Image (cartoon, chains in turn yellow, orange, red, blue):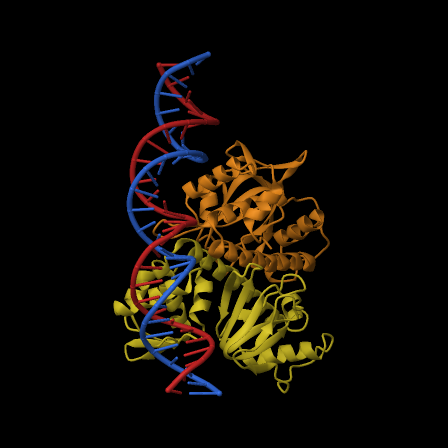
Length: 227
Length: 227
DNA sequence: CGCGCTTTTGAGATAACTCAATACAGGTGG
DNA sequence: CCACCTGTATTGAGTTATCTCAAAAGCGCG
């Protein structure tokens, strides 16, 4: 959907220098692979870049002093993560499934000097992010546990699922704790919701991190208005 | 903090036409007054503008088919509301306290042609919005009813409160239902939380929509980590 | 084979919800 | 001017979804 080459080129330019507005060169690759378990930034780090996920999964979290944790978002392929507010990050970003990441200089978002097209893409991604977060408000505030889990599985299915016959399968690289902290539930409630979906035949779990959707309609019904 | 004149001027230019990139004229005023009860846009409307609140209060809501409603945000003075994702609004925006609003063309956000400074301001506002929404996630997912209400009152106090001796007072132009739908609670729970704060001397309610903060420290303690 | 970590399941506690009644305030008409 | 009416807010009582604490099961790894 997006033109990888031009993105990389654009970033390359920015890396070399803002004045150096010559034609793109695809040689230097800002797309790097990051192993699961590593992190891209931590709260308090200088916010120098935004990150575009090409493959793999990221996790964006915010932690409170008292230990309460919120998973703000999972970064799936196509997402752009790390939009800065001020100079410092106020979230942690971890790699939870080995990921290919394109690093964009923050300036690529903030000014249209350099590559105007990348600037546009990043800006649109930020606006899309606002919209997605508005949806998530509804999720957190107004949905029941089973609706939350069903909605969550639907999104993952749509974005990362692969068809197997009539069914769809995908992996859950994040732990139950991550899912709980994303949905505003406890680990136990998340687990019970999975069990319920399993028992009524909506899904099957080959392993706890491998979902097979057996009845998408049932999942959709349970999610009650995903928009 | 922001330079009203240049904003208005910038918008004026955009109104006249995008090609017409001559110097600002402060004559035509895009700042208009909107009475309580009116609305700025509805879900499905073409997203032509973003709105900067100079005074008064806006309410941004999203409604689901089944009637569940979420108040996404209250637009207080200084806020910018209505960031588009795609061509259509997917929220409703209502005026709940008579407001002075500066209307910015959507293009002022999306391109830096016209006034680059306004473009920057709007972009920064969008990034600030993302950050604020991340905070709100924590609120919705991980705080108790009393913590939610305390946090809510603290924000309003800080942003719209006026000192009265050692105390601070401010008005609540939104209904209990609005507050409930913002915090992910029911009307009754919101009301009970207010009563509790009243009974332990933290606040006083001269009318149901006029709060007097008598013990800010207590409110801060109850909010448990507002960041 | 046993240890540690994650997930699942169980049982009881509780915060918030639902339904219902009462109180309050503002506006209207007799 | 007051009684009434309507909508909002408050208070009460009982229910329930989710949480908490605790134990068992599953799984990978040394």
